[in-house]
Image (cartoon, rainbow, N blue to C red; front, side, top):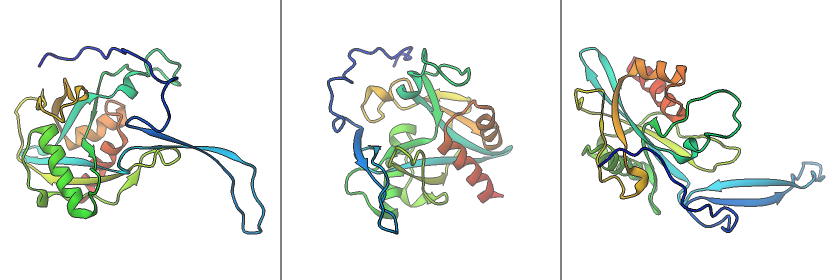
Length: 223
């Protein structure tokens, strides 16, 4: 598949769309705090962003090599990051089309419990990395966490699995299949050493929080 070079906006539906339709639902409340003495705060606004599922998995795939531990990452389209370009920003930053992070995905309706998390991890790895790994090989990598609890309700569940080291080159094309969405086009897979991955997070070369959390937890677990 040809490399993706840009994302073109065909239509901006912001002004004509309801906040409770689409892939993301924005719930807008007016609320007040009820205090222990019976008094009430002033009324204030709350916006909450929901996805169809309130939970997601992020998968840290790692391999033992003669030089240490390697981890597998995916570079993929992330419009929310890409469309920061041209807007006022606090600090100078690179404009990204492909964003480097762990393989990840949201749970499907009805998926509940640890075994469901493992099956979802196995399915996302098959779709996004082209690897067939039995669900029972995935293990939780610490407790789940929220990425942006002031706004987003989604909770991330980190899982990890040891795999055989794949392609000998640093970066290679991800499976063309993905989940069938154009958002999956042009993705790349890349191996990094675990130490290099942590340094890349510290330097801002990898800007994904869940990925840095996973790397540091994996390092501590394997110590």
